[in-house]
Amino acid sequence: MESRRSCSSPCLLIILLLALSHWCSIAATASSSFSISNYCSEPIWPGTLAGAGTPQLSTTGFRLDPGQTVRVPAPTGWSGRLWARTGCAFDAGGKGSCQTADCGGRMECAGTGATPPATLFEVTLGKAAGDLDYYDVSLVDGYNLPVVAVPRSAAAGGCNATGCTADLNRSCPRELQVERGGGTVACRSACEAFGQDQYCCSGAYATPATCRPTAYSSVFKSACPRAYSYAYDDGSSTFTCGNAADYTVAFCLPPSGLQSPGGVPVVSPPAYGQSTSGGTSGGADSTPPPPATDNNSFGSSNPPPPTTDNSGFGSTNPPPASTDSYGFGNTDQPPPAASYGAGSTDQPMWMTMSSASTLHEQLWLVLPAVLLFLLWSFSP
Image (cartoon, rainbow, N blue to C red; front, side, top):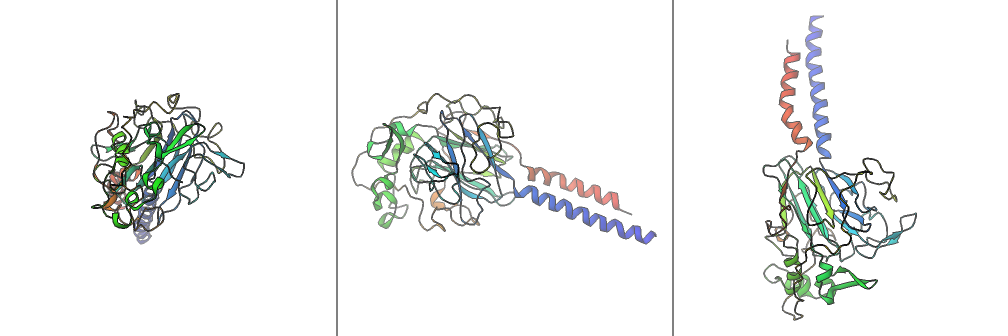
């Protein structure tokens, strides 16, 4: 009888340790999320696209009414982009079209990227504790809406927000404007508008040395100094963060910024083909402050129109030689050096840092104490 007790204790200890390890691995698998908020005066239709080697998110497209936020979970190591479509109309089967940033004429983008022009939030999440996230807001494919991305991390000092709060549709050069219904709804990239190597960083202009900032990219950069303005816009456009627990991606955010870190109410991601208006669980009755009455309240500096010479205008295409057609590259490595750099500080005062803690980091803090307790409990 005595020998049975001495045998069962180590066996039970091993079982408990395996269960705890499995629980920790599950908690770390979905360690991040995207809280997508609509501060615009009209509905938007967010879309998502996964990069090479990572799965699509649980939803790849849905309607988001003014004042609503949807939180979408993301697995560790996820790489991809998020954007918002405008002026959409879909039937009951999810087929239709959008005025800007359409993704194949469907509510769910399901592996189809945004049709330019589109303001993009791009991110590569770290794969393990201690790995860095890489993220940026890109105007490489043009612009359709202002967007701000705010990470929340347990890293010392927090992480930098980035984005473009200016209304570039108001200051867009005439030759780049996309007009619908008598107004400008988007601003094209020079590459899309003219399709020449010097605008697209291709051919003889396919290196950082030959593809330089231009008058067109300067329009974007002067209004949105933290956003990516052309393919080799190093030094001021991409940021890193230590395993952020959540990224708030806010469209048409007013100059006053977010209410408070972690204070954005959320609703559940909608089922396929459903709107987020009314009837969704998770706090649909609680909304952020009312959005601005229009999309023109963002502080554009209205730079003068660019010249139209052919002296090497910057690219608005992603860097060449990516592993898929969307330019995300291999997710086993950090984003390419040609696309990333340090952050600028020339932004509104609130666009500084945010902080929070992640679940798997908290688990690792208590794990040693749990192990010691188990060893003490089952010792002879």
